[in-house]
Amino acid sequence: MAEPEWLKKMNADEYLQEDFDAKGTSRYTVTGLDKKDPNWLAKAAKKVNAAEGDDYVKLDSGLLTVNQINWMLRSTIGELSFVDDNNQFLWYNRPADPKAKMKAKRVPEQVGNTMSDVHPHVADVIPEAKKVVHALRVNQDGHDDVYMPVPTGNLKELVLHYYKRVIDDQGNYAGIYEWVQDLYPLVKYFCETTGQKLVLDEDATTGATYKRNSDPDAASGASTKAEAAAEEKPAEPEPDTTSSASEN
Image 1 (cartoon, rainbow, N blue to C red):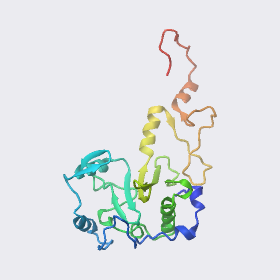
Image 2 (spheres, helix red, strand yellow):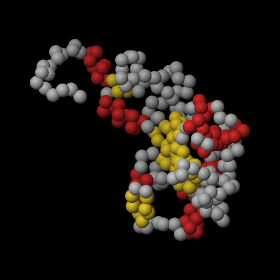
Image 3 (tube, rainbow, N blue to C red):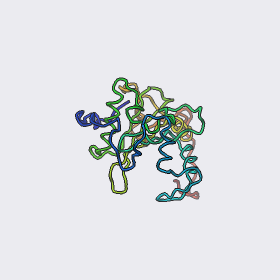
Image 4 (cartoon, rainbow, N blue to C red):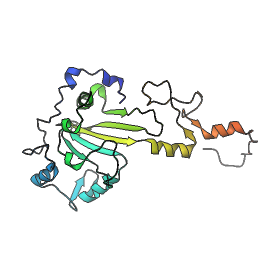
């Protein structure tokens, strides 16, 4: 994935020290359980007497049942997941359709796993993941989020991984949530309703960035169907607007 310049400059001696085996504990760590246990979720919930089903949960700006929260998050656009400050994978918004194909596939049996266990041990996956986590943990250069586009060169597949630093009420690091989404359906709708279109930048080294329209006067930087249509037919006389409402 394309990596921001500020992230590339991180000190390897620091970020490689991230404990992806979650050997420590945080104030919310459920101890005494095997993190690799496929039944970790059920056992941990029982141990802490967790709310479930129609139990109410008071949030800082609402009151919902556990069921309502689950239903809402299953319907949320994109794939969400949460890893705590101890690098333990604790949650993801499981799709309502069990057959749904996920961009960053997760299964219930992984909940409770360490970051080391949920990432494939190939190439530089673990080191790069540690870099992102550590950067957000220490708030590197004031950054509290990381955008990672997945370069495909395909205008009909615009996958983005977004990582956000989560803090508690005192501003302390509490973990990271990740949002994964193919932006194409959103961009497609936007383009169809505005007449704009994406243009592939063949000079881009990653195949994932898109250049703006060469027209320096284009406010949005995108070419439009409306402009193309205007070039194909002569301009019509301007209507009399003296009695009409002002333009937006």
